[in-house]
Figure: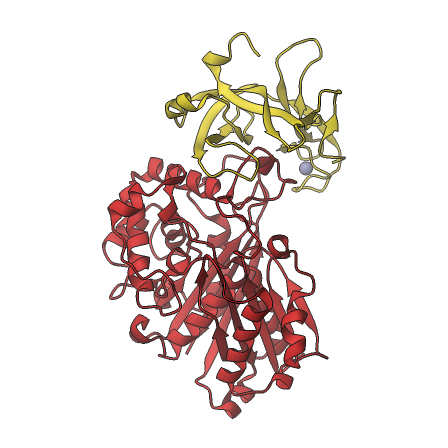
Length: 385
Length: 151
Ligand SMILES: [Zn+2]
């Protein structure tokens, strides 16, 4: 297998409430920006993978709608969906093409225009083939139960959970693409209206619209283009394992398994990671995932946060862009958006968000809730400069 | 599994799902049915096409005890489209080692009394109603004391 490098990234802003452009335009802006960033032309891209959730938008052949009128037609284009992981999967597939020698340059695109297709005030839920969804379970409901059990097992409080929101908002205030720039206080977060007890509105990621694109290539192409070499050390995808038993809802089995595999592929450990963009769709997640990824022990997430371990100056910076909590979650686009922002960090181009001396970084995005599993999917990408 | 729901009468009601939720015709208490792999003995709920562990496709019905302990719960204030808030949902751990998630069917004013570890038991209740008024009847959890006398 050949080593794979990121040669170009591009994205739109994270538009809260209403995207100023259509679904296709969100994708085209991201693709245009990524091509420009790479310094290549449309026809140099040899395959295109697009992550978007047609279950939300009703789209058909979405990636082709984005890329064909940009003059990129004639190459393989495939559309991939696995909920919030969709475009992280697209990056994985594009990287595989290059690694396997099928292409020298491939592109991954992620788009979601949630506001154009969705009624506000309703909660995302697994589909009704799932007996728990039939019973009314929603994604906020599932994470609320993880939060309640975490509080029960480890004595964490709502105030502890709110500190994640406060930290990630502080980070987002430096992110020009986020539309959430007002600081948050613990009181505001705890007293916001309840979505699913014990989680409040401000402990849940907002729905936003965005597009993001990532172009990957061989080392030879990357060197010809003169881009700073950002290598994909690991691009790991796994799926949930079904069980009916009494599993511990505070232990994120699929993430722990995925992270272990990703570290092995990359040949590194959590001590080598300088920053993480994690799937903080709900505030409890950062505790759960910092533990599952091995940055601290099970049940030690609160202490890890309170001691500054997951912030600037600590062991690893969690969500320097502001995370899903304070950038918002354009579901199908989030996996690629994390990789775009992580690439800027590794190039030392992240402006006021810059993590000092950022050499190795990780993105993590799960997705879906097929009953009897921790999550349906988990995608982890580790990059290094 | 066959179809997810089956029409039971003319009253615009469906049962979810007759394969794993039984309402005895003699008026006996409703109960859940797990399915036990004939080859490896693993229990599953609900019934599956084949055993995920050993790939055998031979199962025996394993009726479950009605009462279990609440592992965790939430009260949803922003429910799925078409469901009414507040909606309590919880996972109950049953003596056979199976965990089942379902609505905790208590009036909103009693939701504050829901506690991790409390005893809940399986009853029949309406879990959703579509826009044409078709009700889905399925398993719900109610506190053991409050359930005395049945529904
Ligand atoms: Zn078996």
